[in-house]
Image (cartoon, rainbow, N blue to C red; front, top):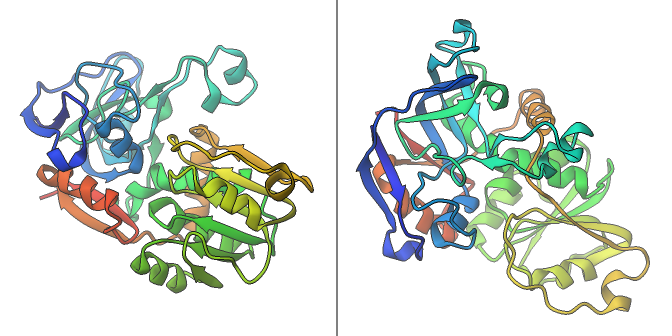
Length: 334
């Protein structure tokens, strides 16, 4: 099967993903083999490719927003799954036994596995996943529309919840890429006024189309104090900026898996008056099910740019350079 393989992390400008042929993977007990239709391109993939997330193996196939059809099942999986359209997310598996899993916080599992980092992902014609960790997707939802929901959407939803934004709240979003363009639709559905901070003018225009009340640059001051904020950009220098824009009692949720260094904080300016800063770590399967339900209810519309599998390096470079409006997907249907 065709794959785009990473053997040595390097800046995406050097095109570190290489075309390769891999043997057809066989599903083990409890697993599915999925024929990949599309795979979303995520900033986490960029962190893996460039080595900001330390390699777990000598080589890996990235990609964790995978949409496809079940083609084969392993022992213990009903054959009724054959032919179903499913989504493979970032959380490949959790142990189910640690103190976090048993209390319902599998995103904090002490021994998790992640798709496209610990195990091969969806930058390939076929991918494997545990049946218990995939999401069944409706046939009516186009695959390229569904793919960004599987990480960008789920993390945006969890970040929105972690920000404690109540209906009618003034919510700030720093960085307006794949996650934010989904999160704004959730926030507007919940009655929030959304203030978007972005360095890319085209991203700001998309934010306005999706109902942002105000759009400005990353360091601009909004017209009103914010009740809640989400930092999607992997830029630690924006943490004090966002905290300073919060009203009393406001919460900043940091949504990224990787963040550059955070400058020192001034207690009076950034944290006093019960401002809170919190991180967002992976997701639970319940987060995914809730987001997919909301996506159908709202309904959420993702804005996507399609690339063929062989242009994965180009897609990641466009992501790094803020040239993607909404989300990018690798399309293997041709």
